[in-house]
Length: 136
Ligand SMILES: C[S@@+](CC[C@H](N)C(=O)[O-])C[C@H]1O[C@@H](n2cnc3c(N)ncnc32)[C@H](O)[C@@H]1O
Image (cartoon, rainbow, N blue to C red; front, side, top):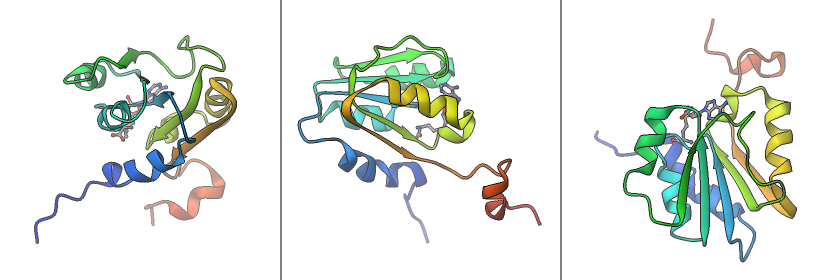
């Protein structure tokens, strides 16, 4: 049976729903090819999206609306405005990053009462998640 189901796209709606009412400026961390960032840019005034992979950044910039800025950079070091975002979102990227430093940085980019929402994949190198491992 053919299906156009896609794991990451399936979660777009869930993440979009986490944005606070009236959100105007949103950040997508680890944006990959930019599908979520483009969707967000149709809903809020301004979207910034960051990814460390130049090829992903080039993809994400393709067809982006004028209110979407795609930044090539590492989430652990990139310079973004502290307290600058109503929501910081991340889809299937956190498992690439050291969790606590990444979450601290993401929280620092939120305005007071802003929302941090992430869909995270299991990290099999963490003991608490080892039961998710596909290894026998
Ligand atoms: C599995 S992809 C998910 C991409 C996108 N969020 C999606 O839903 O399709 C993970 C992305 O995180 C990016 N990434 C990994 N480590 C990163 C880091 N330290 N800083 C920024 N981006 C990072 C990768 O380049 C990759 O594009």
